[in-house]
Length: 306
Picture (cartoon, rainbow, N blue to C red):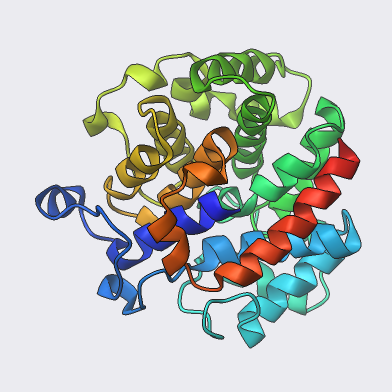
């Protein structure tokens, strides 16, 4: 979880800053203020909703209704925020939370139109990937997709979350990033026509045809589109050799820097481990002790699952 939070916090001060602007003044340290005028170590909705999902899995198991209630609490009460208030939320996530608040079936809360393919479910899916790692591919895919649907129901967003979960699980199994990427591609391509997700696979061509790692930076987009965020995060992981290099490259791509940082940080955190995260970054992280305590509970749950 610290990988997500650190990547998010590094990106918050420069969210929406252009890549060209960040070339001139790159992020090298945990800074503050900037775009959202928040102190150093502040994380955003990416981490908040990730922690809400972690807490739900710990306290209620796989329960969409419970997770949805925590999302509503976050939006209305500032629950699991750094300082008691929400300062950043995507449009699709906001609409979905209002649906959840109104009593809509959690599996149907997220909008399913093609224009609602932002990265708002991908950014918080890591806990589900870890939780269902040993559940079998079909059960994991079903759970990942339904958890995405809490805020993003379009099949493209669901497939992005599933691909991310596959890669996460290959890293968790001890594979190096390059090998994990190849095994993820192999498993994802086996979907074929077996599921409704298969129709969305052409949108992930660069992820699944093996060309992504060798693309130049100028071809990597870092906006809020779910496919772009997945590509950018995986590309950063595959083109670096440390946690810090991975998340700093992700953040300095510009644009939706906090989410790109969070999604890349999640992958890097799984592979490199918490011990690889720069200590100074962790010390500056808002609510470090609270995240640590929740993470320990989640780790205990995962050891029981495995």
